[in-house]
Length: 418
View 1 (cartoon, helix red, strand yellow):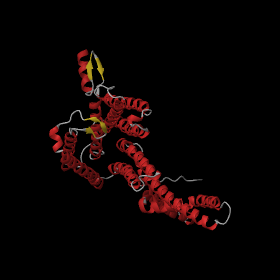
View 2 (cartoon, rainbow, N blue to C red):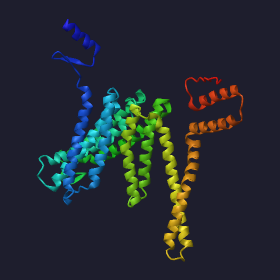
View 3 (cartoon, helix red, strand yellow):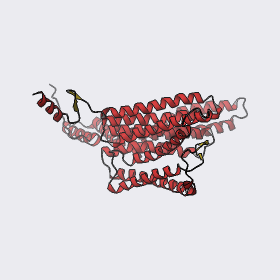
């Protein structure tokens, strides 16, 4: 009888197995958290080494070298573990976790290699670790477009788009061959390539050119696959793709704006904002796949456009007012400070009117459903003050609710008042 009960349990719980007379959960649910623990452990080890190397000028380790990888690996690893644990059959979670682990491994390898440069011979196999760190970082650049081609369901858009996997495999092979070029490592000029091969050096220039062309082609094709998927999508899938498109667009725009100001503080600000946007990409993917606050994307896009436009308009107005005020009040003592004070007060007074106008413009152009709903409710409110016929009001109320809320069904109950 006990054997029959065990067989019944095995049928009822096909994802579990029996061991020692007890039903034991499989190892798979714990695998994402094991990967997350390893990634965070590598990040912590790299952080400890990096903080120690900051006092050693020979290592070349600065704050940016430490902070940026940590800000990258945490969102990728944490989001990947969450998605993989909730939806283990979706490859997106595992790809996010893999990317986080690649960043973490490359980070700790980079710190170990920098320590070996600062203290020659202190780390056994320091050259080999530096080689792995450099190439793991390149594989991270390949894994991110590969992730985008499978968002949000973990599969390519169609069978034809599986050819992108061939391009990705060719790119990985090219990275491997280029990594065998003899001589100093690209990221570590003081370390000789421990796996260098003379035969590769003859074709290294060609391999590097082919790899660069493959990488650009892969980026373009990956972006094209996302566009094709978006045009074919409907409903929930389209909202998921909007989350991804929003964060990628903000990141790309910030980096593009940072190019003209590369040497100034504006360039540093733009690149930093772009990196923050890049770190938000896995978060947006997690929101989209797990469908947590999925329907807030239109509101987020609207608010972002509004505050970006308001900032640009008020910033331009402030600069213009300050320059004009300095020209007008230049004959007064402290005219510059007076112009700045007046400009600040004027811009503060303009904030709410400008925000209201810009919000209406954005809603009318990009958030039409909300704009139409507001207009419909305003018209109904005006008619409600003049209409006395109860049947007409009831029919119009049902129509307004149907147009604005778009529910599956609408019913109206009226209670008689004695």
